[in-house]
Length: 366
Image 1 (cartoon, one colour):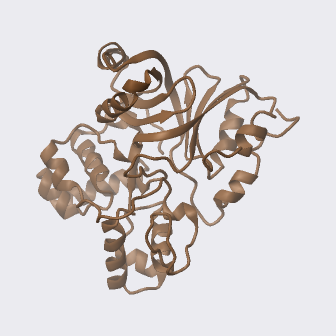
Image 2 (cartoon, rainbow, N blue to C red):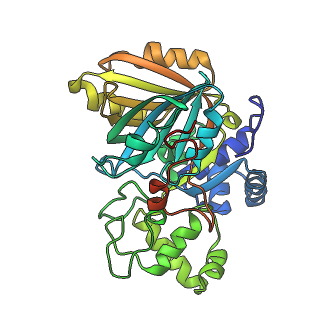
């Protein structure tokens, strides 16, 4: 993602186009123009400019929320490191495909990350690799128990409810829901077998999802050239994948560019009889782009964007009142290091990434 100054905020028109893509990552220029009262030529020009300089990317979401809110296996990691070693460890973690999200806080020695894992397993990263490095001074791990909101569901608040409804695709067909990982992350599934979404995924559909993972706005023509199948076949299969809820997209944009320079991680302790209601309330808050019930002393984790520190203070002092929260710890994000897995032919498989210790996370190194 392009590095920009904090005051380089996009125009309202561009922000509304970003929000439109959040509603539907494969939104056509014609539909966006009709809803947003713009010309198709303007929409095409602005989307082309936003994508050309890296301001906006649309990818397959690395984490999709199951309809029942369950978790397919994820850990929140809070890692403190020796000063001077932070960047090296961040780079090593970012190279792992089983870690889709990494943030560095303003404290200068703290990393927040999400790691995919098998539920209830002794993950090598947590139990062996990170604790054995001299660079790590402390490590906290919390298992995600329930998902209230993931980042791909967050919407920048510059559209009306009617505009969002008009821009959003139809609800997925009834049936098994995504289980927290995209098919692209789970590897090929033989024809006739159930894929990670509980539906059959054949090699063609798998190849389409793989191609869309780093660029979810690839045209049907480009996908046809990539797979060697007729464009009409590709269009039909893409429509089927989308109708089944397997095409969950996420817009990658520096929040500073849309007027939200402050991101905060919130570690909350909530009484058990308030946990579900508090989680739902956070998920419904326009600032919150992630909310999860977790194991550990802080049993509710959240992440939120704000236009400034006064808005963060107002959120803490007003919006959290009455939710049964007994403890709040707030960490302000200073740098976003990763928001999606690396892409390309040389990326390791998830299994290989889990097996390989990151640099400077091996016994006797620092």
